[in-house]
Image (cartoon, rainbow, N blue to C red; front, side, top):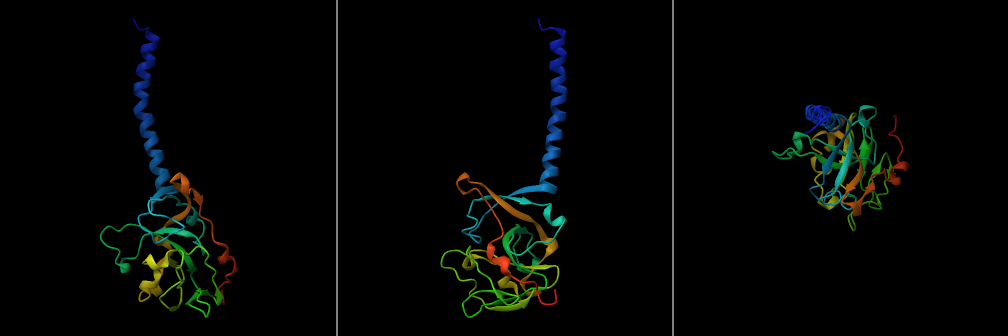
Amino acid sequence: MMPETSRRKQRSFWIELPILLLVAVIVAVLVRTFLVQTFYIPSGSMETTLLINDRVLVNKMVYRFREPRRGEVVVFVPPKEWDAGPSKDDYIKRVVAVGGDKVVCCDASGKITINGRPLNEDYLYEDDVPSAQPFDLTVPQNRLFVLGDHRSASADSRFHTDFKNGTIPVDAVVGRAFVIFWPFGHVSTLPVPKGYNAIPAPSGG
């Protein structure tokens, strides 16, 4: 026969279990909503930085304290003008230029220039050029010019220059992708490439 103390402990456990599960669910929802969220990479538009089926962690808090910076990989809700389709899936691209930047493609050496300075992009997909589409534009304030690392397979700002110079609003950004956590063989961080360190601020900025 089970002692009374043991029966009370067992009853207490089954009473507390639903509460603990509810707390765990609430914490998970809060973390996903406000702090960190996982995203799945469905296409090759960011190869070889991000491969199809990679999973990334996205920091959803960082841009509450500052705006996105050049070179960061961001997840964003595509503008309706991009005709993203009924699924309304989020996009993931690299921020190449920010508000006030003058972006031109391409100079005599075939590189994109930002504020007159050539951008060295050693992360581009093998044999891809920075862009097969020429452009010469200034990024409006509070907007971002975004490109995929696999330029020949990315539907990005270059294809929507008829609306706001192809840019996306800063407030459409969900967060910054900062680490690949799956698969294990491709685990790595997503730092800002060194080429962006040489880019000057826009004139008058």
